[in-house]
Amino acid sequence: MTDQAERKYVLITGAASDVGRVLALDLSSEYDLLLTDYDVEELENTAKAIREHSSANVILWEQDLLDGETIETSLAEVLKDHGITVSKFIHLAGFCRKAPLKMMRHSDYNDAFKLMVTSAAMIIKSLTSRKINARALDAALLVSSSSAIRGVKTFSAYGAAKAAMNGLMRNLAIELAPRVRVNSILPGGMITRATEALYEDEAFRSRAEKLYPLGIGTPDKLKGMVRLLLSDDADWITGQEIVIDGGRTTDGTE
Image (cartoon, one colour):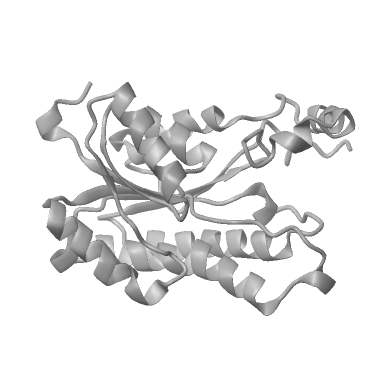
């Protein structure tokens, strides 16, 4: 376990989600945490779970990531107020409105890109600033989706925004090298609070089990790769899209 005096901070957006909570709990053994999410009540629950699980310092950042104009100022304030710098960044914030194109609104696309792409860029901009974060950031991980590389009905806004995240990742990986490594992971479908009702349907679950060669995923399947990509063991890995989907996108037999 890392000595408390040597611990670094990880900023995690979307930390109230199942994936965010699992990753935050796992990383709390090694890092202190700066967490944000639109769901303040669930974010508090994530913080409570971490404090019961480890001695990690947990700071909550209250910020609407759809309000891109205030992200830099707000992040600068929370870092200054707590006297910390952030070394690692995981961008999980996102939402998915599943609807056919004929039912989609302009705001659905606009909000998807602001939340999943623009906010990531503004946060990374802040964390690489000498004035705001003493240029302490050395690794950023954008959590994309396999729907960014594989079409899914009714996922047009979500899939397009996740694909744009990968484009942002590749460009920043080059621009910010060698100081900052930037990568993305592309999870497949997983059982979470948001999707568990789907998997309770026997027909849906049976089809999913057939589509995923290694079985249906859960958030804990991401922990190992996330730890690796944030660590110094990945010091020659940047600009990569890493699919974690139990073989779903590789199987061409369906």
